[in-house]
Structure formats: C-alpha cells, structure tokens
Image (cartoon, rainbow, N blue to C red; front, top):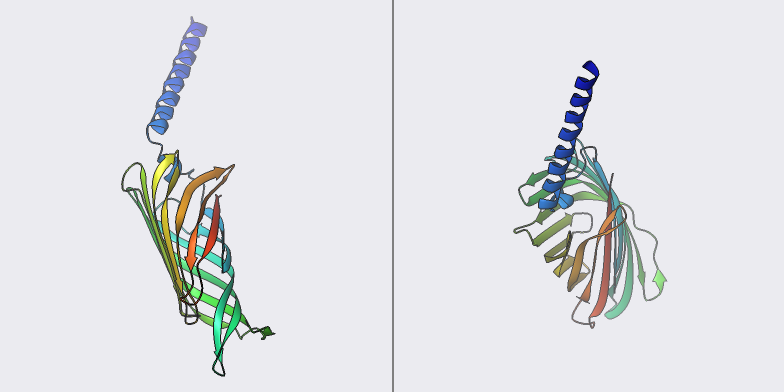
Length: 254
C-alpha cells in the first residue's frame, strides 16, 4: 500500500512537470519577441564589433557590462569602445587643394543608464575619450599627434512600435575632434527576429563629412552571434562623386 502511494505521487509530479513545460513552451511560441529582448538571467555583458567600409573605413570593437542586474533590465551600465578610422579628405595649403588621408584611433570608457520599457529600449552614456591622429598630405606623412582628451556622449534607442516593425536610432558626439555621428533605421519583420528596411547615417567633423543612404538587415543569427548587415550609397562632399558602402556589425551576449 505504501509503495503504491509513492508511485501515485511520483506519477502526479511527473504529470505536473509535463503540463508546466508545455505551458512554458506555448508562452514562448506565442510571444516570439521574447527571443529578441528577454535573455537568460545570468547574461550581464555583451561583446560587439562593427566594420564600415567605403570611401572611408571605420573599425570598432568594445564591450558593455551591467553594473546591477541582468543585461536586459533597467539599470546602470559600463561600456568600453576602441576604434580605428581612415578618412580621405581635402587639405588646403599655400592656396592649393591637396588630397589628404587621416588615420585616427579613439578609445573611450563611458558610464550610462538604460531603460527597458514595453517595446522600447533607451540608453544614455557619458565619459572620457582619448584620440590620436596621423595625417598624410600629398604623400607626405606627418607624425602622430599628441593625445587629445575629451568627453564622449552617446544616446541609443531601439523600439518595436508594432509586432512586425523596428525603429532604431544612435547619436554619438565627442569633443576630442568635435565630431557627431548619427544613424537611424526602420525595418519590417521578414523572418523570425530578422528585420529589413532603409537606413541613413551621417558623420561630421571639422574637416570631414559624409552621408550614407542604404538598406539593412538586422537580427540575423550565426550560431551564438547576432548582427546587422547594410549597404548603399555614400556622399562625402560636393567635389567628389558618390561611392558604395558596406557595413557589418555583430554582437555576442555573455
């Protein structure tokens, strides 16, 4: 009699776990946006990298770490970014318009706060940045500049106004080279967690400016990697014809 009661209790427990698992699986499949915004509770950092290639080239890599709580919760965060840039510019010297190439390295450590709201993710960062530059004018290579120290500010927005639409915006400003970079995009869901649509990017410094118009695919997966790929047409100034560009970004949550 005792053994039969134990078997009944064990069977009831297994049946309960079976129905609980089925209910959880149904909840996940009913809300696929969970796969995009809600991650495991132990994920507190993300590694990221991006490459923008065209008439100019920018390579960036960094990491973001939460200071309190999981990665997708509202709270304070720390972000480190290092980047390399190569821009082709025009340099005036002795009344002549000469071709110039500017190589730049930038490193920043910023602290910020992020807000995870219903269908809306906002983040703001502020912190120090250091920059080095090397200029080549008409084939003459100059020495690296003395390090410049300044302040970097960054704002990010990621929103799903509806189940099948995506809006993103990022603005980065720094005092080290008086630059402003901004990107905005809109997308429509074409597959699970994959959005495609138009994008526009602008970058301005005291000596250089560019505008990019293109299309993007955001949310692709390759194993444990997620990313974005985009391409289109870029314009630097009125003296040069436009040229194509390609941009690839990837991130890994840990």
